[in-house]
Length: 459
Image 1 (cartoon, rainbow, N blue to C red):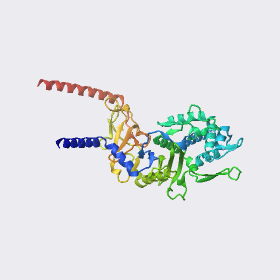
Image 2: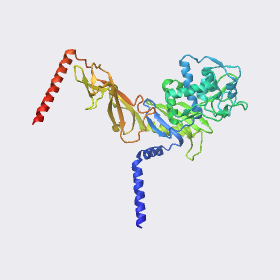
Image 3: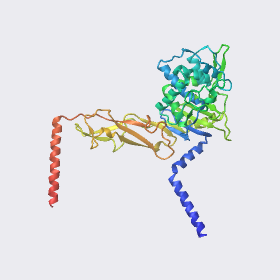
Image 4: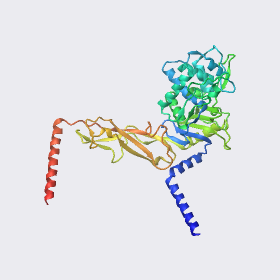
């Protein structure tokens, strides 16, 4: 009896310690369970601040299928901007791209002809609206000369953007096995015959964020619910957008404000979707990967149902608010000492208002802190005159106390997570006479302190 009681006591003690040591993990699980997102990985962010609202398994690299095409879209729009291509340029498809375009309907495609010119614009629309794979390969070849070289560009751009868990193996997101023509492998050199592009949910969100930041016009095309490829010709083919959230008749998944961005599905990836929507000036980006229904069955509609859950949560519970105004000062922290100036100190304040994403009822949970750039200070912690009005001296960071805080998409030092600190006024450098008198005064002050100390020591 005594032994059993002792074992029970020890077990309860261990359990109590585990709960106290790992509270963050429990809090995260509680948040995830609350939304009940049926996906292997998912993330939800507010676009302008980069604030993460929700995350689940965001760092594991998983097959992304046609969401890969967001990188192809980025590199195409970059080439257009640089003048390397223009929308009216006509291209003749390679045998490879044309052969892939004929894999229809087993793959998403607009079948295209040999020796037929196609404009960059119509190939782009076929890719962005209908996820046409042959058109995507044709664009990759137009940009880089070959899909192999284009894949090199994709991975280089991924590194530049700051992605961490990624591997681009082709321009489309298909499994490389699907790129064989007549049984002959045609996948990019340096990649395996059965590889697929992989990205983490967080990196997919980073890619989407960068795409919308640099080329917001992508939404003009991504939001088109239906278009006919080569309308009025014998080659006309309907292109309904794979993003079913754009269709009002899909009552289960329709969502006000949705205007993008990219679906993706393969056997390995399951059903994926990167979505974006805007309401009342707030835009969100969501990513769901390998989604299922409530019974655990992978279905096409599940990716949109899970996306709707995320977006409903975002717009129903969050808003971007101004927490601290411009010219904000923290009592007791807003004065910096100045040396060699006409004044011996200067006030500091925020340059702009601080805005961030706030969950309803949590506005009072945010606390500001001034962080001074120590490289600007001397060994005594002083600025050195002259100091100009509006000089940057550091940043104000804001932390949330209590509640779940996932941080920012690009880390807590990304733009929007801090606001610049500047001097409120200028401090002119004192002239040589004033500086000399201060030096003399300082000498006698030090001398008197030494003498006084010595006399005190005698008694």
